[in-house]
Image 1 (cartoon, rainbow, N blue to C red):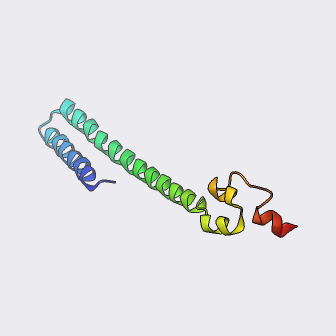
Image 2: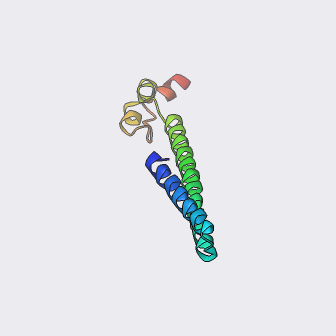
Image 3: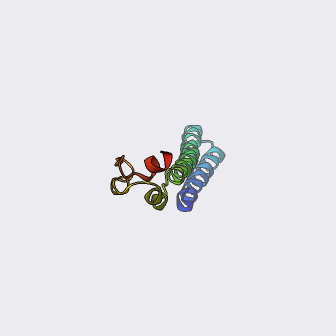
Amino acid sequence: MNRSITALHLGAIGVTGWAALASGNHDSVPWTIAFAGASLSPVIALVRETSLADERWLRRQAATELRRRDTVDWEQIQRACCPTGWATRGTAHDSATCNQHRSAA
């Protein structure tokens, strides 16, 4: 998660918490309740941002793993297959000239 966003949330928690304590010391119950409630909003936002950052990290890890798994060694296909198979990136094969078919026979 971005450190500046975290600092902003922590600053907002501190300011609204301080305002709640200051208004409580001056016997202003409605303002104390309002500031105490307002200090919960940055806490909720901080927890949400942290969970979203974790989710983004997991998605990046999954995408990296998928890219790693889907990597094809095209040079190996070129050595093992026919020119048609190479030109179409393995989607079509010329059964008359394909190395795989000739070696299997």
